[in-house]
Image (cartoon, rainbow, N blue to C red; front, side):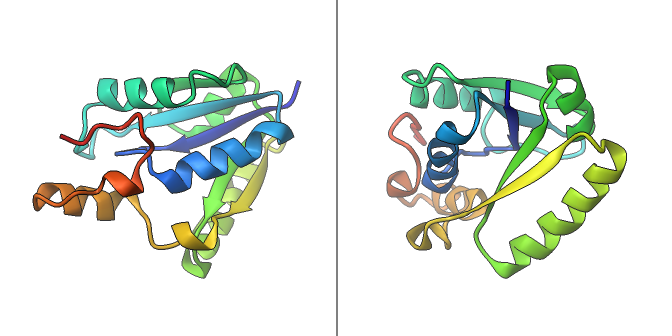
Length: 152
């Protein structure tokens, strides 16, 4: 069984994330959307809300599950027996960062492969931090998030 972990904070999940996940469905038997908990980082949206949004958004996709984890992503991959880490790339800067992380992950857990999918051109400028900035300043960011996400 080909299991992929798609890690992130998803604070909030964006239409870019959604696109990557849906495009990856035919590639894997199971995709675990893994929300990383970082005790040193303050989240904007509560993790319970982020989990609920993702579960609702992918309720019609039986091969997709949602989980939260802390610690190293490769350790989570070992626990869930995932052979792949799925990552989306928007820019060349994303590639440089993700390449170095992927190479370290390969050294820490040689059985895991990092798979990159390119974002659609229309999603390149969309990021969770931009959405948080729009919301915190009273703007309407609904066009940048899946329909399951209620930012109010």
